[in-house]
Image (cartoon, rainbow over all chains, first blue to last red; front, side, top):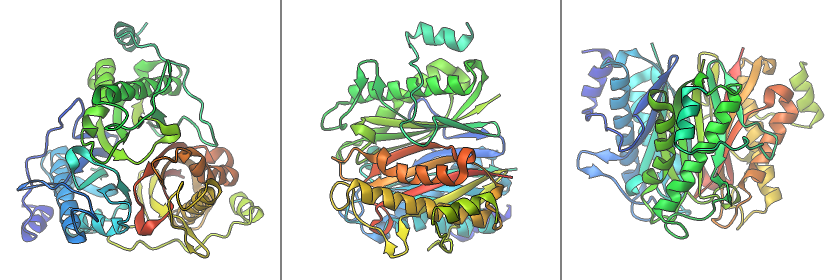
Length: 153
Length: 153
Length: 153
């Protein structure tokens, strides 16, 4: 077990089977040393976390949803690296989208649920640039969606 | 006529003149082997397709709008490749934005209108990562906007 | 003083201290020759410009907000280049997000406030691809957020 897998285990994170896209696209695509990972929605073990922040969900529930987006991203990173997460040289960028009521301005705190996990798992290699915005609606009513660009060796 | 142009013809797709941006930016910019293509809105031969999914437009109309975004992207790909679409080595990422009512959760199915065409035209080279979100409003009231990253040879 | 700094001075632009992120992410991350810069919100000298275009803010106020996003981006570019803005080889892509009422369709004109400044400061090297969308809400209620990809030497 490499260091990244050990951290996942210590954090109690169980990676799911990476989700298969439901259409004519792929979960990740490599170009040069970059891998672009498709937006991952807030699928949790109990099913998709749906709802709008500031209306149906509170901050804590939103952070949990974002954390599952990160777990789903890591599952894709692993698939993109042929199963070896130590080949993730750097998480470069996360793009965070929050299903949010127009009055809910704590969008960054929600996406911290994803950023914090990436930091805990990947350490220095997990330090990423980020954008975070509140949108009108997400696929299947998901609460959060996050996409990513990583650099692989 | 190369293979890509032949597929476009077989699909009955006529590429428009690539749209000129209306401001101090450019339709695409190359960095290394990547070309980043500006967001293309749903211009159709009859004019801009406007309206909100789940309010003014149904799924089928949204998919048609997304397909025109893809057609407009391909016109930009061609310009970026000096007229030779066979130089598109890989469509890496599509970013899809749907003008959507908060109750409309079929955002991915709308963007499939773009992904499917890219797949039909470029085959294996058209397999792309993707994100798809529903937004409050798009330029000029457009129904759909899609941007892209491609790798060129 | 290099050419870029001279243009900033001629335009009366004073770069702020680059904002430190408020969470487990970084303001920019380099991969190869690309630097991905985190979304910068519309912080002005008087504080954060908040509000919704088409409701609380008019076009001119929105353009001013977007201009400050660009100023904040340039401050990050400078930090990413070790203080030497002449190392910005190309501004490749801006991603513009406008806090907008669903009836406000002048989203591109708002983001022109950012694109125009980038053009004035960087000239040919400032010519960038762009997307611009209207979103439901932005961090802390900001009016505008813009992220960027640049190529550095």
